[in-house]
Length: 433
Image 1 (cartoon, rainbow, N blue to C red):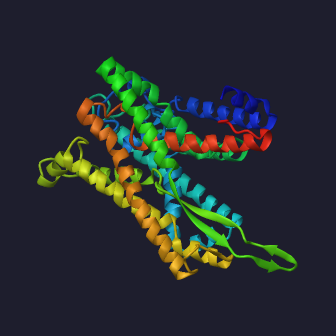
Image 2 (tube, rainbow, N blue to C red; image 1 turned 45 degrees about the horizontal axis):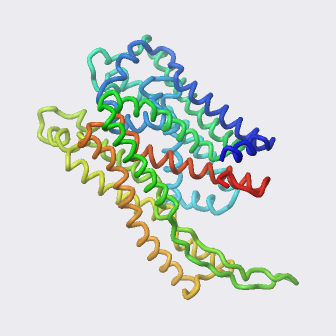
């Protein structure tokens, strides 16, 4: 392994890509600790320890920003606006024919969709920055803790405008850094930045468990975490390979086709998106309840059942929503009709299945069957932090579970695969050989 890493750094072009990627990651982490202008940074540090911070949408954004949200740094919004814009662009393909046409145009259409995603990211950045400043002024960002109501030094319209502009510019810079990694570095830039932000919180999480729970619980968490990591790696690598045979055809004087391949359908086809959707939807009731009368019955019901992560109603709702969004996202991103039409166009067929409509029905049948265990797996992984809250009271700092674990393992596997393929092109041996 160490020899393979040494060979990677001895290859000039691969070494330059790796060093460039590491340099951008270091720059991204440095930006996470530079405070935004007009923020009382000393008071912010005193408010970060509030116990309500890692729940709901704020906790999710803070996870993707590597803790920069609660530090109110120039990268406070992190990569979340870009993720949201990308998801919206994918969803719009279903309802706007123009977006679907651009998707089918190839490289030129994809470039146009990427440009739309960039514009949408900046717009969402302005919206998110405005919301963040509003929550800072009211103290909602820090759970309405005494002394954390307004941390803005210059509370004028132009002072607030500078903060919003800085946070939006930070989002744009993060988006540009991610694209630079994709073009000139190794791996997918946006995914690597998310990986960096999530992994940055692991050391403090381990230290918090060791300090608050003791060495016995810490060792149990490590053992359980290793078992969960093994399970996640196994499932993330699992796929159903549907064989596809291409018929031979003559084009001029040359013979084409006659090859065999397969369509890989992963068990977890939806990735981490269903957990993000479920978390966001579950946060909406508590957000709406903040604007209601605290004495009213419906506000009390939401506060009791849909706010605390250790309540059975919250857990069951979270579990069901994760399964629902797993099916929903797979249905949007994988189109059996489109796959069947492309196979028919190029003379491909599944052995034993007729081309056209029967192929589409077969793909839909397989996709529905394989999504069921995948959705249960996602729901189980999403529930791990909530179970940890009940068993060892470690919801605030439990590192193994939910969104963070799926991101770290998924991005890590894809990056290693890309480095491995580049090593094989140059040395005939991969990174793991």
